Image 1 (cartoon, one colour):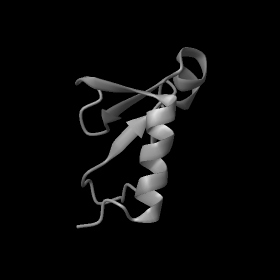
Image 2: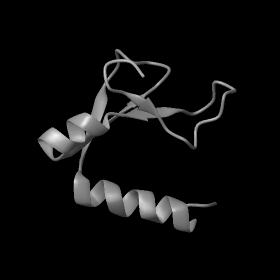
Image 3: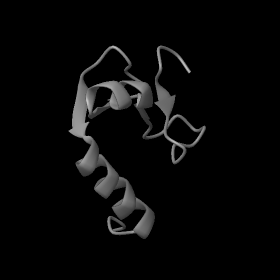
Length: 66
């Protein structure tokens, strides 16, 4: 973990599509910062905690499977 960023548990070790998030920042700001782990100096998206919780629940439920 660097600077509070954690790689998603859904990200593999093959260098594919990986995201990171910063839970400590989410706890202090009420927003969940998300970035591309392959480009840590690139842009960061910020989601409200309620929206992020709903998104993660949808992922776990398979709502976004093609």
